[in-house]
Length: 346
Image 1 (cartoon, rainbow, N blue to C red):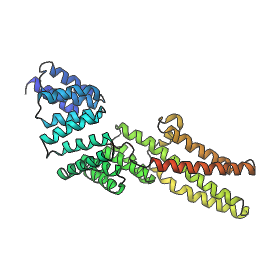
Image 2 (image 1 turned 120 degrees about the vertical axis):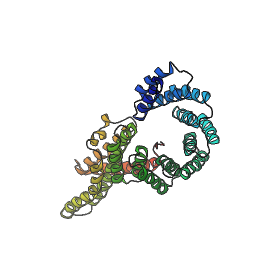
Image 3 (image 1 turned 120 degrees about the horizontal axis):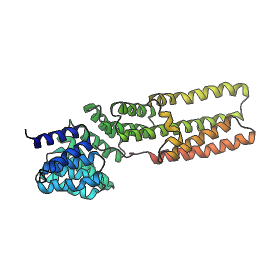
Image 4 (image 1 turned 90 degrees about the horizontal axis):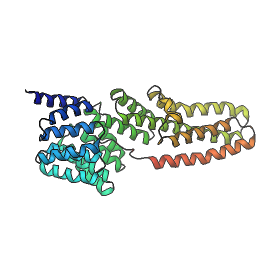
């Protein structure tokens, strides 16, 4: 093996380790002596993509296809790069060329599915589902194929099949970060807070470097807080109403028991979240996307506090009326938010 081959092998090893910046330097050094190598240009595009620079990766990915138009791996990479660069229609065209070149390669169908999902619309979703199902048929032991099929079924509101597909992906690869994130998001959307928090915690334990998992953790913390606030609001409304109708000797033990029964189911989600997740429930520590949810949740809890310790009977009535309106709004917001939350494809 000469120095040139060693440079290529070194770059490939760095890419496998996820060290895109070092791989880029190694590849550019090799390209200085062999600028016409389709393989090297392919590696450069991969290195740029790993670094989160898909727009810069488009040119070398196209160049690799131009230099070796019969290599399906170059087309798959180009389609993936275009997809990351938000050029879904171009990615779909390239993916179709890849399928025509190698119809029995499951990865070509996977890229078709990803491109059509990004194009949006029910027709695109159906095409994506067929492509993802074909990928699963060709490669039943590939976690990425099951993960993609799960996404297409989730987009069709078939959450049972989607959950089964994500679990299939995790049975094949227990550390598949995208399937873990998708399963956690699905569970949170269904109100399975304890399971969603546990799935997310396991994902972060195995793949702490995944930024999307940390973003999902912020969403999970906000979701748990919102559910807590809505349960507190409902409990307060019921008890506040009963306060006017039953004697205090009965109300006090009833209130204690009801509060315990309401809070009990919310303990597992808090315990299943990673240690320190409570910080993400503080508005100044969260993302702009989750900020409205946190503000709403803390506002509801604040009104609950007023209702539990009212300065007057009128204040209690106003607090209960406000809570009823906030509870209705919160339930409406939760119903509208149910569905795939930026699922991870591969």
